[in-house]
Amino acid sequence: MAQVLEFKLPDLGEGLTEAVIVTWLVQVGEVVAIDQPVVEVETAKAMVEVPCPYGGVVTARFGEEGSELPVGAPLLTVAVGEATPVPEAEGSGNVLVGYGTGAPPARRRRVRASAPERANGTADRNTAPERAPHTAVAETAPRAQPPAPPIALAEGPIPVISPLVRRLARDNDLDLRALSGSGPDGLILRADVEDALRVGAARAAAPTTIATAPKPAGTRTPLKGIRGAVADKLSRSRREIPDATCWVDADATELMRARTAMNAAAGPKISLLALLARICTAALARYPELNSYVDVEAREIVRLDHVHLGFAAQTERGLVVPVVRDAHGRDAESLTAEFARLTESAHTGTLTPTDLTGGTFTLNNYGVFGVDGSTPIINHPEAAMLGVGRIVPKPWVHEGELAVRQVVQLSLTFDHRVCDGGTAGGFLRYVADCVENPTVLLRTL
Image (cartoon, rainbow, N blue to C red; front, side, top):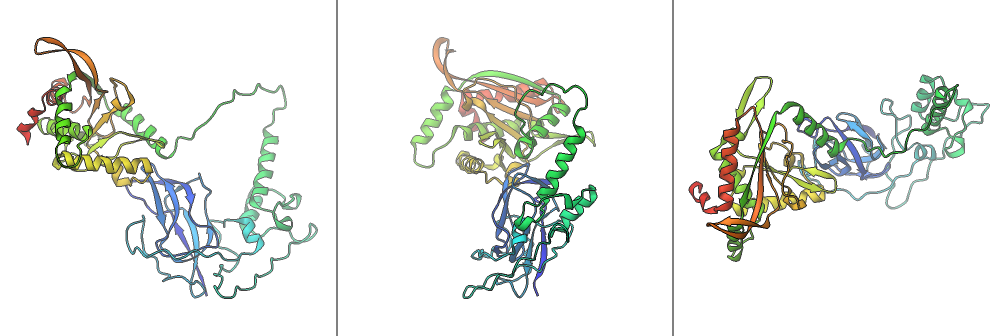
């Protein structure tokens, strides 16, 4: 006999407590294999595919696309057992795709469901299904479809199958006999009950005196997913961090020439962002106060011995900050490759929570937007962010004469709790010196 198992939204790590359903990858009645992705969700960190640890027939899904579920809430139910033509029924224990058994997904097959089951679509989270679980259709000769249960007329039993619908009506003192079902043969669905409750609530709230003027039309966008995470982090940064900003113009002509010379030689091309990152890690070695964070509860400054370098990346889904781990131990080629990998993942929406967390310092190249300067908000709980504007030809005094040089504005926003202006100014001046004369870096190689 088949057994119905409930698969709940797993803990996706990094302290995430909820996720938004983006796309269901399976339908009710489909056969799934162990570790087959069943739903794509968006967390506050990234888009991820969630695999099901059971193999069997999907009997119910919980939550519509676009709805938000907390960790531990039911995602779907799967019928497993002798009647289920799938691999082993035991769960794999996986959380995200790419870990664990890695069994190949079974070919999806449809199952037949009775009309009321197809109409209801999803099951009640808190009530076990009243019907026996679905079984897969044999590949050779399909089984006969069981007839749908008869729906009683108005003077007989109420045409309701789902216990959720009955409980919803009972809890709201709604007489089901007064409703006309929109399901097959007049079956009363959950949507019918909810519509009736909305109409009743609207009538109860209707004004009995002079009607008020309608509110101006507008568009409301929920602050959830990545947009909500960005809003929460930036608001927290502004509340907790007393930030200050200093900036300087630098002649980047020699840095651009050095990059051109590097790329003229054999080997992978070096990106400008990689050279700026290499300068950042060298500057943080000299001024480690800026590679730290403040432990508010302990009232301590925690100085870190590694540099996980975040960089701002604008995508169609919003601003994200991927993190290059152990950037202090990478050369220009390695940095270039890792920036390219993370940027591609950001644009395709495949960044993992690990790719987006753990940064200790952020490099923000807003020059790609065609602007010269900015006062960015620190990526909480980090202590500083280096901003780089566009590099453009400008008149500049070089070796005592006026010349046209490639000029860039550099800015440093820092947490004034971890250091004073002298440290911040020293860091920024060292970065500018390396930009103007890249040979300065030779001292740290």
